[in-house]
Image (cartoon, rainbow, N blue to C red):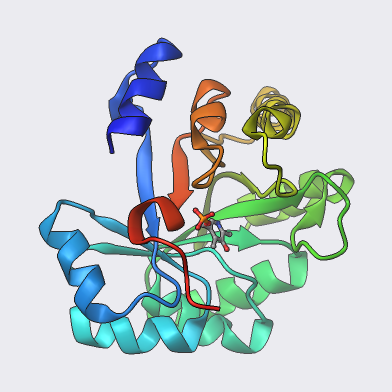
Length: 216
Ligand SMILES: *Cc1c(COP(=O)(O)O)cnc(C)c1O
């Protein structure tokens, strides 16, 4: 995406460190295939069942990431479907994922979703608990903790997202100083990913700007 590349250059970053997750919830298979033809290689899905159908049809010439709220009873399916889970938000969910991966015999990459705004409509752990979850996940042998994810409140003015992205980056830096080896920051959506890239995003999750408005 040109917009992402321009934002990377503007921020003095190498565009190669920024990966695009094309958010394909509600988008049908034919349009996902078009995106693959156009060079998209990572897709983000919010619902396990919806994703399962698409993954069965499209397969894995591309990578599938889970970005929605994950319930423990879906953990079993999630670990076999997805290469990465951006939305880990509790210790019990981490333990359940780890148990499920153990049976499948691989590792799953996870990010901790942090709710920085305190909005009750948003999922994710509160900032204060993120450290406890991170320390626990580091000790689970079948999960690989790679980073943090956040979703700020929606603002018409994308500059208002910046304080949230700064806080997520600072939280990651704090964890790194304490020996938790995180590399990734999953932050930025269609309306504000330039700001997220300026603040250090390594994954941007973009739906509308790629596929157009979703049907409600
Ligand atoms: C839907 C969704 C996105 C993409 O939002 P757009 O505004 O369409 O780019 C990104 N992240 C999460 C967690 C989502 O649920």
